[in-house]
Length: 126
Image (spheres, rainbow, N blue to C red):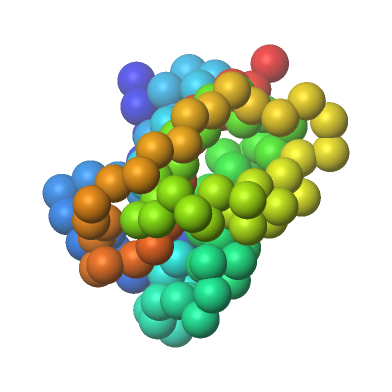
């Protein structure tokens, strides 16, 4: 059985997918872009600000599922420019106080709404 998880008040996804799906004890979070769920605007001032917004969206989805950052076991980071790798790592790393999840980071030619970053992840509640 699966349950749809979403950020309260957030705009609907821009395609035919759910923000997150909870199946048993596993939460699958779709790729999050730097969209502010309160006002529907993209946060694109800097890659650091974009990364913070993406991580805030992920944390909100985890919270809705009764989880937190420590439950994340795997992340995938998609960057428009791999030269942003160090800046993204600094922000991303600040969200994990202990063992960070497994992850890959790849450069892609284009992301939805021409954002600079998208992150998806998998979390498990023990």
